[in-house]
Every structure is written in structure tokens, then in C-alpha cells.
Length: 112
Length: 115
Image (cartoon, rainbow over all chains, first blue to last red; front, side):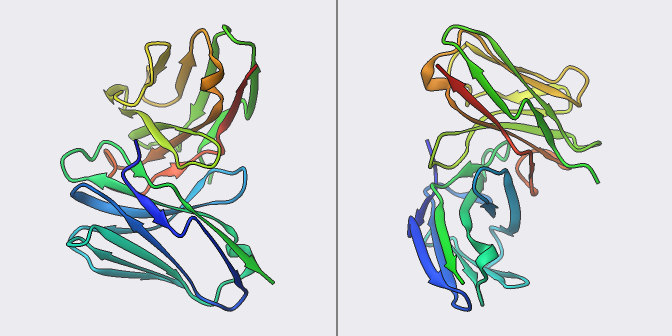
């Protein structure tokens, strides 16, 4: 069973716009990670945020974490057509860090 | 440098056949994970190795699924007597640190189709 749910399930925007994806989870976590998956390919790690952190930046990516609401958001600024992909959040539970539990994903389409 | 590789990339099996899927992790990575990804879904955890020790196999769906990593490097996921519900993409990932505490590097996956 999947711990995370992402919202929206699908998102379509124009190049240059910002894209925001949200992830909610159920159980206390050690860290939360975001991954990108292009069609038919493996996943690529984007960013990791630990449970004691509230915000992290990497290039055009900004991730926030609110452990009181058990939620995270991924913001992609100034999107490009190459950002078209599925985006997944994944959590490592605080009581069992042996594995990542993935959400259901957001499919992002960026139109040129 | 070389990333995680998996073979074969595509496998078609008749129902009831046994299959073996191979994963070559990044050299020196202690942790190796197998995930199953159904169409349109996120990956679901199957099993985790730290070096040669299988520390967590809670995600294996049945006793037809078996994984090994005998020398702490290459891993094989074996599925016996395949069923149609086994059709999925099988992803392998490795990490330089134990467990899910750090980023994981994923291979391209093996797409298994059971007919």
C-alpha cells in the first residue's frame, strides 16, 4: 500500500509558468524525497528533505515540509518543456528506514 | 560513471514460466532495493539488501518471488510460475548508505509481460 498521495494527479502548464505539486502522507517520517520519472524510464532523485527541515532549494526546485500537517510541496519555477514527466514523493518512515514508500505521482505536462 | 543497470530490459513470459531479472548496482553501494511499478502507479517496495544480507522482504507479494545478492554486488530477482498479475516494471535501486536515509539511484527497469 502507498503511504503518500499526490495532488493534483495531472497538471498542464505553459513554459515559463510555475508548477506546484503536493504530497500528503500518513505516518511519521525520517525524510521525504522527490523523484522524477520520464516516460518509460527509471526514476531520478531530485531532492531530499529531512523531518527537522522546513524548506530546501535546488536550482529551480523548492521543497517545503510541514510535519504537523504531514504534507510536502514541490515547486518548479520557470518550467521548461523538458520538465514534462511524472513526479513522485517518497517517504522513509521514522520507525523503519529500510525502504522508501512512494506516492501515486503527479503527471506534469509543460507545453512550449 | 556507470549507473545502475538492469537486464533484460524487456521480458515476455508465458504464464507458468520462471523468470530471472538481474540488477548491477553502482560499484561500492551497500544498499540495494527492488521495487515493482504497475502502469500509472508509483513504485512499490519489494525487498532490501544491505551488502549480501536481505534485511527486509516484507514487500514480496508471494513465495513465488525470491531475491538474492550472494556477494553483496549483483542481485537477481526470481519469479517462479509467473502469473498475469506479475506483469509490471521491476525497478532496482542502489544507495551508498544503509536504508532509505539517502538518495537512491534507479536503473531503467525490466518490463515484464506475462501472457
